[in-house]
Amino acid sequence: MSETPRAAPGGPVLPGAPAVAIAADDAYRRRVIESGSYGAAFFNWIYLLAMRAWGHAAIAFVFSVIVPPATWIVWIVYGLYGKRIAWETRRWRDFDDFLACQRVWTRAAVVWTVLIGGIMLLGIVLAILFPALLPHPRPRPGPAI
Image (tube, rainbow, N blue to C red):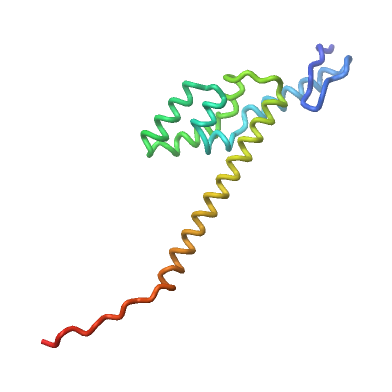
């Protein structure tokens, strides 16, 4: 028993390909779509606007910009479900197009995380070193009473 072959991420499937290969390809796609998204977690409402998920973008904007204590909740929820939302809301040419887009968002999130981490580390180092480099004013003796 075999099904009609479909295109795989690596290229087209030859006619007569076994149904097992197609089932494995579907399992791979499902696993990728349901995995977490670092880009969605880090950029949340910007990512969701790019994925044309207007309602989710509005919710993420309200909870991350207007209600700042809820930012962590937005990061976690959209970090876990961002790819699934993107797959369902935006029109994709094929699965490879989806993967390429997700890789770009992940790369951007990693670059920004490293950049912000570097700035924070530089700030900590300067906060420790800067007071030691400045001359300290010496107290002047006051009038004797």
